[in-house]
Each structure stands twice: as C-alpha cells, then as structure tokens.
Length: 393
Image (cartoon, rainbow, N blue to C red; front, top):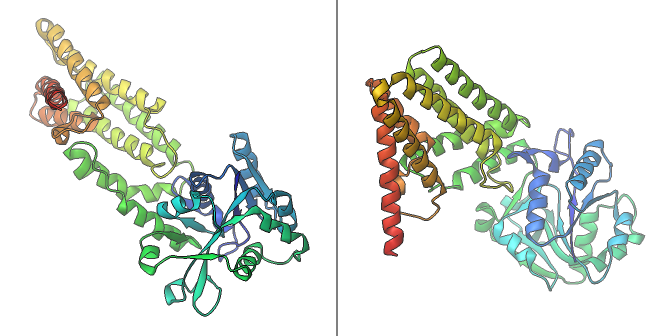
C-alpha cells in the first residue's frame, strides 16, 4: 500500500493560512497536491498539521464524506501508527507540487529516493543538504522510517527529520536539473505571487487545438485570458452559470416582446461565452466531458429562442419547411458535437458559437431564416465530409 504525507506545517508569509490552502484554479493548492499523489498511486492521504486548525479539520471532514481516505496528524509521534514496513510513502513538503514527469517517477515502486537540485541561486528557498545539493521537498520512502519518530522531540520538523534519516542512510538522490525545474518539473507555491505565476504559466502552456477556427482563434484565447480572475472566487462557477441562465431568459423575453432579432442573438452569444468560461474553470482538475445540467438548460433556451424567431418570421406557407430545416440544423450541430474523430474539416466544425455567429451575420442583413438554412447546410456538409474521411480510412 502506498501512503502520501503532505505537510501543512508552514503558513504563507502573512500567516493567514497554510501554504496548501492558497487558492489555485478552482480549488486550493492542497487539492492539486492530493490529485498528484493519487496519480502516483497513493491510496491513503495523511495531512501533517501541527496546529490542528479548524480549516484543515473541516477540509478533512469534507473530503472523507466524499469517500477519500484522508487523515490528519499533529506531528511525528502520530505518524508511528503508519510505520508498516510493507508500505511505501510519498512525501510532499509545504506548497510543493510535482509535475507530470515527476509524478510518473513517484508512481514507481522499489528503491527509496529523495529529489534534489544543485546548490544554485534559483534553488535558494530549498533546504540545503550539503555543499552541493538542496532538497526539493519530495521523497519516495519506506514507511518503516516513520518508526524512528517515536523518539523525535515534538518541536522537530518532520520533513527535516525525514531528510536527515535518508541522508545518513545514503538514500539515492534524484537530481532535478535547473532547466527542468524552470519548465515545471517541481513548483514551490509559497505565496500569492508564485501561485499567480504558476497559474498563468500552466494556462499559457495549455494549447487547445480542438474545435473550429472560431474556437481556436477567439473563444479559447478569450477564455484563457479571463480564467485566472475567476479562480480567485470560490463561487465563480455558480455565478457564471446563473449569469448564462439569465442571458438565456432575457433573450427569451426579448423575443416575446418582439425586440430586434439581433439583440436576442447577441445575448445568447454572450451567455454561451459565460458558459464556456464556467465549464473551463476546472480545466486542471478531475472533470468530465459530459454536458452539465446548466449547459443543457441553456441549449434548450437557445432552441426555444431560435424556434420562436422562426415562427415569428415565417409566413404560414413556409413555416413548416423552416421548422424542418431548423430541426435538421439542430440535429447536424448535435451530431457534429458527438463526433470525436479528427478530420481535416474540423476547422469548420459547427458548434453553438459558430452557429450563433452565422445567425447574427445573416440577421444583420435582415435574413435570419437564410442563416438557419446556412447552419443546416454547414452541419450536413461537415458530417458528410467527416463520414467520407472515416470511410476512406
């Protein structure tokens, strides 16, 4: 069995909260640390918190209720109960977050190792081992080492004690090069500045190549630019969902009041952007590609608004054909969304954003119904092109 020991012994410089409780993405740094050690194979999480703060106690209760095997200990003496020689331990110091390659190394079983770097200026914040190396606050050890804490003075730092033991036993050292550290092999999230820099750096490295030209050139860059502002607000996801819902209802009301079509479509497009940001808040967390309830309701509102406009703009003799074309457009966009295989036609792959832009464009020239036909034609053309490619393979 593999255990993970995550330190919450140090606070950020202003002393307001442990390093692990700084906001990061749609949660806190500790969420990402736990996610990292679980990817490395940890089955049980142990939080080391000498102060036993209320925030940590509440966090442990919440995570336990969600099914996570997590416990909190005060110090080294409490760790002795986990000193089974057949178990392994992954240790992360305060605010330390390993990158993907390092997580893969931590997932390996076998020899013990501590992760170090050469003593250069860039690593000045890390604990010095000797004249050559500094410890990066990460170790893969045997749980039997925890048995030595029975004699450890209560005021000793557990991380430093583990380090001393491994160094004295000449444990293997894995060296992290300076270029790898700069590339994100290990991150030290010690204050708000480092957290902000880390968030923006990871977001910039996320290259979204999926979707059509509008998604790649407009929607994703816009989403990427404003995401960090919402990560700092715990309730941002809920607020964005309600805001998108409100724009959908407002668009429906504007159709009922027979306001200009372009106003209703603009509100729908704004709501779709809000919804896109909402659905990307948890971009770096465990998430699902399934449509959320909020997204489905918003899509239904789009269908209601567009369908109502078609009924208002259609003559009695053309209403039935227009509704059929609208159904074909809706079906083709939905089927295009369900198509996951790559195609050379993906740059025009129809989605909500591109469909609304097309409708807006034609509405600006007073030809909304023509826009509906254009969306249907685009959807059918994309599906035909994708099907031809699949068949050719």
